[in-house]
Each structure stands twice: as structure tokens, then as C-alpha cells.
Image (cartoon, rainbow, N blue to C red; front, side):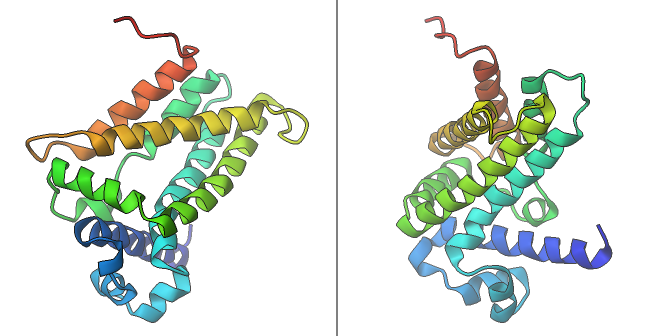
Length: 210
């Protein structure tokens, strides 16, 4: 990636994270595009060059992460088990970028409650569904390439992609609903929940022992 492309990617990530953080803190209706742009250090016009709405900015984090996951899966060793490769590709995307690590670490309980409120916003739910559909298609292509099956000819790659998406969604819901008494390590916790979810999927979802 050249310098110009890297700068554009950094600006996009900064805007998306600013949208998430401000909406979690204040609520969707109390955040303006101008607020997000100011938080990221750019103009509202620059925001509009990247995103069509606040919801699109928030949903872009999932979409961009999922597209990187697909690329990460393609880059895994060819002799690696499929679900091991998927887990490694997914876990690699839980490492936060500088737009996240440069910010103060939020309180887990406050952050989780804010995430739940944000994800209940109808506009964001619609945009997230659109982003998830695009991400699933790309992940299905990557799975198909890895196992030598065309998604157009066999449902297997699509099933795997949909299962990964479901695991990601359930892990995210569990993380957001968790209650904690201190700041904690946000990224490590989400990573642990994701690994647990994908490990259970890879094992065929056996019923847990009481």
C-alpha cells in the first residue's frame, strides 16, 4: 500500500472510530457529522467523501475488518486446517489500530451499555445488515478459494461464512452485555470470546457439559 492509500485508510479508520466512540458516549441522535469530523481532525466535507451517513461510518468498522479477515484467510498456510486458519485470521483483526489505542481506555460497564444502545438504533441495524452481506460474500469467496469449491456451485463456502458471521455476532453481543467493575483489557476479552465461539463451532457445537 502506497503512502496516499495508507493515509486514506487511516482517515477512514479514524472517522469510523470517532463515530463509534461518540455515539456510544452520547447516543446516536445526539451526534452530528460535524462532531465526528471534528473529533477525527478533518472537515465535514471530508467525512462525506468517505461515508454517506453516521450509520455507514459505524458499520464500516465491521465491513473493513471482515474484508481484512478474508484477505488474512487467503494468506494463511495452505496446509493449515480450515477452522484453525479462520480463527487465526479472525483473531488477527481484534488487534486495535492507533485510532483506538491512542484514546483513553473506557470503563467496561459504561462502554458495554453504550454499545447495546447504539446497536439498537434502526438506521445502524439496517446499515450493519448491508455491510454484513457484503462481508459474507467476500469471506465465502476466500473460503471457496481455500477449499477449492466455487460458492456458485456449492453452498459450503457460504455456510462457513455465515457461521463465522454468526459466531462474531454472538461473541460481540456477549461482550457488550458483560458487566464489569473496572476498565479491564477490552481487546483481550473480545478476542477470548471470539476464540471460544469459533472453537465450539469447529468442534461441531457439542452441548456443553453442566
